[in-house]
Every structure is written in structure tokens, then in C-alpha cells.
Image (cartoon, rainbow, N blue to C red; front, side, top):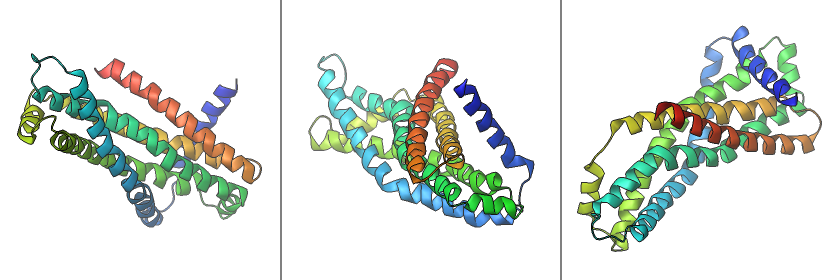
Length: 245
């Protein structure tokens, strides 16, 4: 029963964002601020994780492909498809759920505890529309861009690791990258990116917006937001793979 209560409140929150929209000029500054906070703030961890994901995938794939019948260029194909299909969208979204999700939940939770949200409501401002909507829009714009950057850096990291460790030369890696490329994999990765971006922005916003209590509850709400976001991302990952692949 508790699940249906949360789910219904979550849907009402999403509905409340559109019932009484504010002047669109009010959104631009907040929207750009959220793009910088989410995108530029998470970029360093995205770069580090992506490069090492590609490097580790190259080394472990080379370790497993011991048969001389398998060409070395196959390593590049596996790294490319792994980064595009699964590692960049899913693993990176789980990391961003901890980085971005906890930030959104704690920010809104602090505003709720300090009664800033109540002050906005008293002034006649739709707080759901003004506070949550720009965060979701910014996530839908920035997080897919981060996932594209992650895929490119992961493939480059795999190429660099293969060259530095002597596993395979860069020209062989480049040849493997161009072999058997299925462009639908890129489209599927973008479907996952937008789905995960909506989850990891709206779910923490729900937990932060509905905090009740004191500062201790803000920490609990942030933890719950990250855990639930990660679970929903994994469930959506499986559902999208079962439906679209």
C-alpha cells in the first residue's frame, strides 16, 4: 500500500508541474544554472570513469580471447558495443544517480525544511513547476550529452590501453571499430539515455520535495532517492532491452 501511495503522489507531482505554469522567462536562468550544475559539475567524474571503463574492457576482453582463430580486431568491436549498449548509458547513469540525484534531493529537501517552498506557494508561485521542471529539462538535455561523451572517451580509453599494453596496435583497433557497426545500437543507447535522465532527475526531486521533519530526514531522503533511482534504472534497462532488442 505504501508503494501505491508514493507512486500516486509522484504522478500528482508530475501533473502539478503543468497545471499552472509560470512565465517562461523565469525558467531560462534557472534552466541554464541547472545545466551547468548537472553537466559541468559531473563532467570530471564522467571523464575518469569512462576512460577506465574502456581500458579495463579492452584488457579483460584480450585476456578472455585466447583463441588464435579470433582476430585481434574483435576486441575493438566488443569494446565499442559494450560502451555504446551498456557501460556508458547504464553504469554512468547509476553513478550520476548518486552524484546528481543526491544533490537534487538534498537541495529540495533543504528548501522544504527551511520553508522556502511554503513561501513560494504563499506568493502564488507553482513551486513544482518552478523548482522541479527546470531540473528535469536540464537533465534531459545534459545527461544524454554526457553519455555520448562517455561512449567516445570509453572507446578512446580502450584504444589507448590496447596500444600502451601492447595488446593490439591502433590501426588494428581502428579497423575493428569500423567492422559490423550497427547504427541501431546508437539509437538504442539514446533511448536509454533519455529514460534514465528522466528517472534520475524526477525521482530524487520527488523525495526531496516531500521531505517531512528535520535535517536528519534530508539525509534519509537523499539515500532513498539514490537507492530507488538505481533500482528503477536497472529495471528500465531490462525492460528497454526486452522490448527494443
